Length: 278
Image (tube, rainbow, N blue to C red; front, side, top):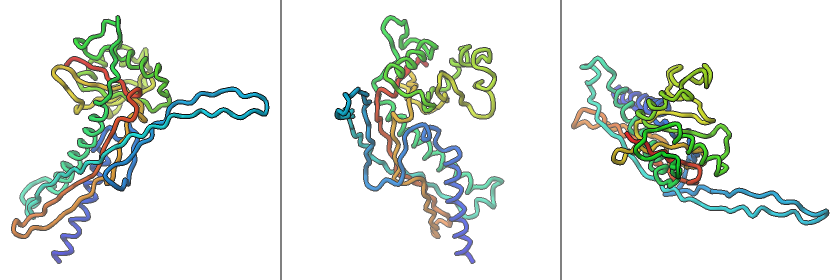
């Protein structure tokens, strides 16, 4: 009987971890280019340059675009989140110990997924600081700085196709709320208010804006980003899997959630950094 009970515990725990990760694990994974089921220690993302259309003479040879192909290698890293669950903990507490540990492991790995993507964004050297604009590192996230990033994406012919994203810190989100064009229904209409609904995300300037607590902070500067989905690649050799083993000497289960993932910057022109004082 004990064997069958343990197996039910294992299967239920694995389901709970996967559901928790899918529900609230990673906020940024869906905003970047993603590949799954990778075999090997790395994978390659292809970066293709822009083509130019040309005319041809009657019955002449069609000109070729000679597109520039550049490969970007993304290395995968293995990450683990384990903990113990005493067999009788659920009898001694008013909370579901299994669900608590499942959520903790899934959220930890979800944060790690975001850390990998943020580290890839941090390799961009494309800055939203313009000569003569008056915008400096002594400023927070101002409308002028946002428009500089918006301008940089447009100047680089980054597609305005509904796949642009902007991620900022919570301090910067508060600064955006003070900008009428971001938060006032007279400018953006009632459907795009940042505090409408349960999710802290909204559409502005053709992009989805969201706050994130894990963005890099160096000194007093928080690194925020305005980017296109294709500018960053995320690869997964293994999404979250869970191993649950019984240790009789401890009278406890050891649960280990793990994944193998990586992220790389593919196109630096498609990701603009907005440095904001915090």
